[in-house]
Every structure is written in structure tokens, then in C-alpha cells.
Image 1 (cartoon, rainbow, N blue to C red):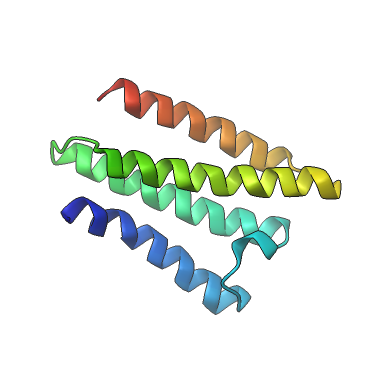
Image 2 (cartoon, one colour; image 1 turned 90 degrees about the horizontal axis):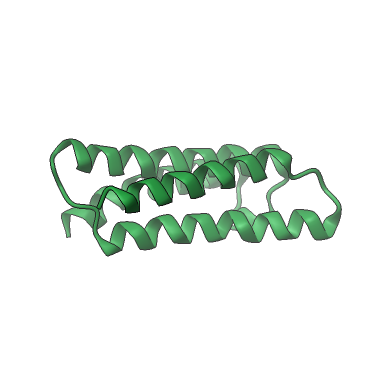
Length: 110
């Protein structure tokens, strides 16, 4: 339960930012820079909470892995949407590659 609470804090912060700044609940409908800001807040917050758990010698659970995969899938959906609309998606692709490397690294350290 403690891990779920720690991982929901970055999601709540990014959701509050989404509502306050962009006045929407749908991150897929955001334009490029606004989505990247939302996504970076979400990703950095999640990985900060993961590394905080690692600092306290906690094990990375399946719940943590599911949070990482769900955030990664959100980025992949936005990537495909950007490709189909013909928008530049270079920064998002770099972020997704780095995120995949971090996911593999964290799973390797299990």
C-alpha cells in the first residue's frame, strides 16, 4: 500500500498541472510542448519515487513495473498519434527510448 501511495503522488501532481495549466483531463489531446511538459513531470516524478524506494532499500514490485509500463504506453500512444498526424515526434521518441532503457535497467537490478 505504501508503494502505491508513493507512486500516485507524481501522477496526482502531473494531473493537477494538467488541469490547472491546460484545463483538460485528456493528455492525448495536448499539443507537442504541453504534452512533453506533462509527460516529463510524470516520468521524472515516477522515477524519483522509484529511486526513493531504492534509497530506503525497498524492492521494486510488480505494481511499480505496471506504473512504468502504463506511462510508457501513454507515450507510445501519443507517438503513434503524432506519426499518423505527420507531426514531429523526435523529442518524444528520445524520451521513450531513454525510458525503455531505464525500465530495463530497473528490472535488471531486481
